[in-house]
Length: 336
Image (cartoon, rainbow, N blue to C red; front, top):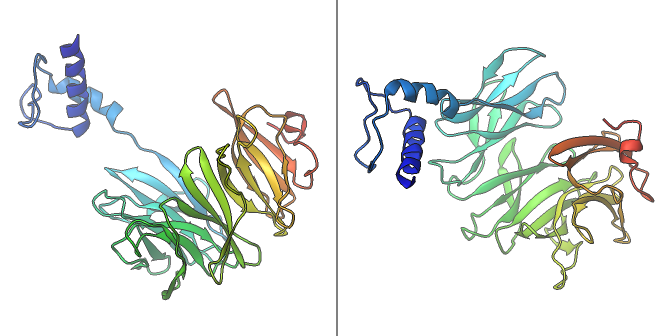
């Protein structure tokens, strides 16, 4: 049984490598030891290949002014950024790197350039790049050496907050840059540890919400001054209880934040916090399922969210002023 299992694993591995020979049977590479594995016909390798190679497409951003979007599509062995200019339109490839390209996002007010990240050699030492839509010119924005991860755009669309390890090689400090002017890049806050992530800018761009990740079960939320980098902890540490907070977002009036949390629950629930009092209200207390994602409407009057119910995603839209009670969920007229 063990030899048969090893043979199956070897076969799938070789088929995934796409090794093709002129002979009728698959030739085992010198670096692989085959023990008790029968000869594998090349015709079988070709048939199995269709299950090992796949192509997926996903949306990374919408243009702020036109009905266009950036999508990521895998051709050959890497994902690249493509532009789709109209519904049902053909995609136009924008990047042609031997390395995969991730997270193409338009400048959020004019959309005259996009930001993406990629690494070299699969080492996850990501760099941020600017792609100019008019000229197709690509400009490196980071140092080319450290690990950099893109973060949120400012409300005015003139700055990008991101994390970088360039100071120590391991601590993820928060940096801010105007991508249109790479010389504007500056260190905003020196931080200890590798789990920091900027999440959102306040409506007036004076504050940045930042997550500090310790583990999958323990995170903390901070409010950072966008000018000085000074930070204030929104969720104090509690040695008796480890809490996971995620996806904090400012309300449109800037007076509070929305986030998900498993505090006092086995589920991730949608919560609103008043920033002046630090008082919180659970908005989905009547739902015994995890809230996976949520998003505010442009005017801030409604909030849409997804719950994971036995593996199925269930959507609902609620009125955000409903801060004193629970979202009606399936009883609300927008549930589907």
